[in-house]
Length: 298
Image (tube, rainbow, N blue to C red):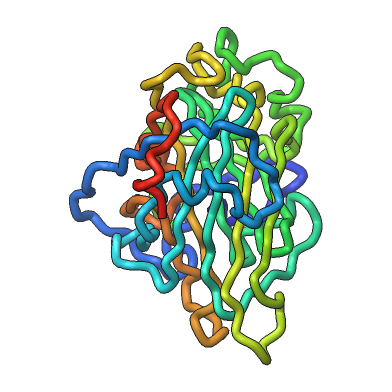
């Protein structure tokens, strides 16, 4: 969750964001990050948000998300699943919500100001951020650590990653947490090539006279769009390859539709800070070339 509004020029976000959204960091020792096996799907997935393909019943689903800071159970039992084929990385979300709400309709609006789900995919020196709300409006940023973004670095000299010419933000940390590696450039106009996404709402958006079941999300990230994060790994992955991928949800309303103080974040595994931008806390996703055992699904 970026927690800032994109600006035409670089904006520096540092520890001045302490106390962002009313969340407090914790210094307790963190458990090991989760590890997940992503299996191959035998046939392409139609990206319509409905999660009706057999693969989503067969694939293992994450445990319900936990509070990003404390690790306590989240208010709504959000889960996700990941599968893949030779063309795409597929991610699905199941997002229970009794009063589905959304406001933003313009691409690359600050979607974190709505209820949303988010995906972060990390390489060694950069990572990609994706957010989507119940309207299906998306927000994308490609983040590059400043310590590598210099002459001789893998991203230096490329027009799409030139901070002097592109719309950027600068981030050191969120919610009072400053990452030990320091600042990174965020390229706000970078779009994932070939990205497909869809949202299905089981209910009615912004209508409070009924109870909704919630919404679901399907995403397809073409492997070729991940080349800048592969760090020499094959695309599609080889069996046993490991990627760091974070799936999360941020929520502004409670089970009665009332505003939630602090817009809590819920993640696959706890970060220990109100900060989505900690790649070493992303889930370890190991790719298997096998199809899933149907008994392991939901």
